Length: 468
Ligand code: NAD
Image (tube, protein in one colour):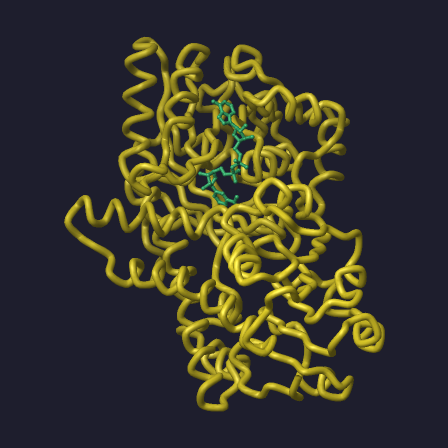
């Protein structure tokens, strides 16, 4: 049986130039990437690494200046070297000027933020539309305007209308190309994606997108071509599903704690079922980050607006909010029911390891609840402290993991950075006032902490070792 028509795994057709495009070499193209945040900087750099000429635009002049000086404004493993290499190779550059970047590009990507609107929880598309207006002024020759930001259905059509109104003579198409990379493994996710989803109409933009992604699709990555609306919705559906998976296993963890079961074995037991799959089944402190919270909220809003409410996703959001309150209660209970005046040493504040991103991190809910209950908080995060200072008050930030423990009443693990997995238990014990660890990421083995003589609370593993 052949593959569905819209999924292409075979080698894409040759030569945009043969189709009348202005590519400099057979497969390389000139691209502008508007927005150099977590997505724009990573995807722009990766496209450059694949051989394209990429000009990244950002309206944050300070950020552009730092990038020009070789300073990477975010933490993402492997990114700094890749940026430097491609800048040296003259395939990657940075500017604040649309006029320098947009004319004569085969593709202009929109990769600006789409945060939650305070007023109604929908996606704030202000930056996307502002970028569309700017792009319109500078289009020269046929260009595909590609939306990589996560946007609600209909945004691509609106971007199309904005550009058409501002520049009626422009030759362009608008495509939707949602990004599925994860912070912390963003380069690998971009270079070896499970699939590339592209929403567009017509052959001409398709040829451009095929040529752009050709180095990736040569490795048999499926390209899924669909309508713009479908591509836009696919991104929200993916994030809502993953958020549901995380929330589901967190609820199973709560049951495990009450019935004496082990959630990690349950995860393995269900995850090895190929219909379920093992990923996103680690019980923890609740999901956070720059995508799941805002995208579930935007999806449920859209769904209600079109008269097709997603009751499952609404429940997921509520359960996840409740989870963070529950985690604070769990910590207080583990500390004997009262944390007034106690010092809690916290390892990790970012929403996940290998990023400095603090957007919607569970720590932003959990730590203030602990402070409200009277605790003094001391914390360390390998990469997130500079960002975290902007969001969290009254924390004593320290320079390494062991420094959070000195005379602390308990040690809390909120983010599973690898360096926390290999800490020396004897040293931890000698530093803490009481040998109490509350691990919301299950990074330690029960037998090891037992041998080391800790009172240990984790998630979904009923066994509370020791007694304080
Ligand atoms: P970000 O906030 O890190 O970066 C956005 C960048 O756009 C900033 O550098 C900002 O200065 C710049 N910008 C804003 N307005 C601009 C304008 N008018 N002209 C030029 N630059 C402008 O955001 P992000 O995390 O990279 O996310 C971007 C989009 O990608 C969002 O829609 C997000 O939902 C989506 N996404 C994010 C991730 C992720 O892991 N962060 C993954 C997949 C998809």
